[in-house]
Length: 448
Image (cartoon, rainbow, N blue to C red; front, side, top):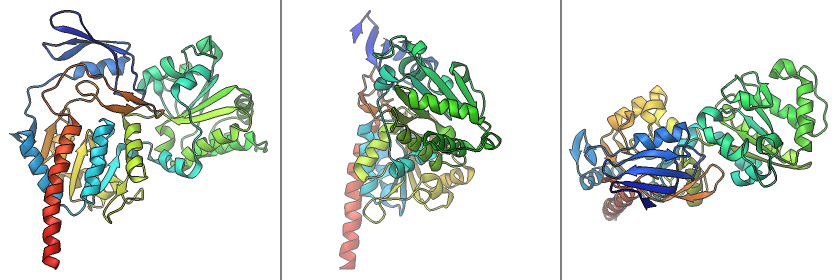
């Protein structure tokens, strides 16, 4: 960090937490008087917008029933709501630090509630597949330095993760890939031609909903089984193309399968993820192959890691019996809200009010909602208690996990008058513990 004038500062090696790439080579020029970032060197289009839009607004630190309140008043109101709830739920967590996520898990455990992350509506099926199939994995640095065959399946990194191509997997020169793009063969499989398609040496236009059949056909060919030429009718890909691709996969030095939500949020779901993970395992009999999901939010991978450390499960965890239980479809947030079972909600760094199914949003409107967010959203508008918090990575330090499970420490650019998520959640946990001890102690005395 260096000062370049009375009111300017440059923060070197800062981290962009917009997407799962979590690029940590940003050089941020900060206007200290205006409390804003004026330049973000090395950032992609999405990253530049992320840094530019985060300024300090003249807003109250909290609102209760739409009226300005102090943080302390909001903590008391939120604690009273959660302490009186029968089945309180916690949701979000993918755009905050691991330290804040730990506090959220502790709160869920304390109040015998339910905790879920945005994973349940994106790569949740992959989490289920990991448990059943396993994972051949690697870091993005290893892929950059070694991978000569790169396959993207069901994703559009050119628009969703612009630097995934340029920093990690396609164009960068590596230790064993000295010529960068010239040393790599790139395959892209999708149901339509996206802006990512031009980067591919081979584009597979898959029929919608036929990813599982195509992946299973590739597995069969890898194992030397015969496939009927009619595979083209069901998947859209000629048998000859598949045979050529399999030969290239088996003969490469180091291959990687990157897969996106085109696999997890379509017909097949966790079977699709399981198929692509199993394909990587099959290929390891001939060469070195890994498979990695391409994650969206800045710290969604951290959320999976933290919830797994604390509970044994990655998302959709229920503590109502006093110990963690995992059952997607029963304990995932969309399902709990759609069935009308939750009676209070703590939403952290997420906006389900803008993207959940209508039935789930309608139930959110009927129950008391507590929100922690750095900006106004559809969810903060329907909240009973809304905290305005500092933005992680821009105003607060902490730890996040890149999509390849590598932890990165954040370097904040400037201070915020608002508290961080960890600070609010820690205070909420402490007050909630007191209220619950009083409530449960009273119940025990009454029973005696």
